[in-house]
Amino acid sequence: MNPMSNQEQCIIDQAIAILRQRLLNGEVFDNPEVVKQFTQLNIAGDLDEGFYVLFLTSQHQLITFEKMFSGTINASSVYPRVIARRCLEVNAASVIISHNHPSGISEPSNADINITNSIAKALSLLDVKLLDHIVVSVGSTVSLAERGII
Image (cartoon, rainbow, N blue to C red; front, top):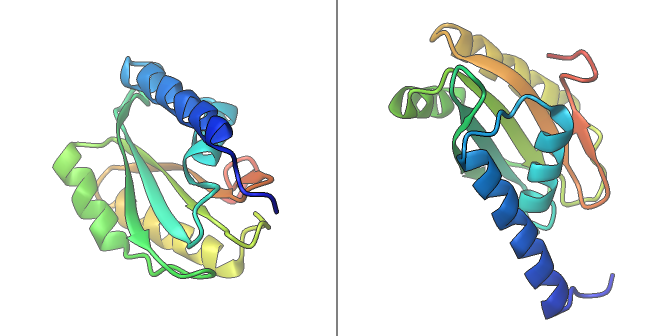
């Protein structure tokens, strides 16, 4: 794989800045394609697995986008209680979770599906809705909601 040039990285950084600004200006985050593009641009290039959360208002506007957990090249420990606590801190009504697969294969694993179900169950006790889980790799993204898993 060829390393990215400075010019290419600058273009990507500008695209991310534009997307973030649009979202922070109240654009509604209810289109899976927008979410997939946003997560792809933000986390696909990470060398280690990371787990991110988009905290949203009741109208699906972005409150904050945060990396919650870091891992290794093929795993990341995720704790639903930490996500739940942060939801209460930022007053989120719903969330979209996302993580990257540095392997380049965005197919969700059984562990991905299990943690999704655990997070959804924990958040439902707080009246916070899990809208989607996006698995990201350099070449593609998978939405568990689009697949009917959520």
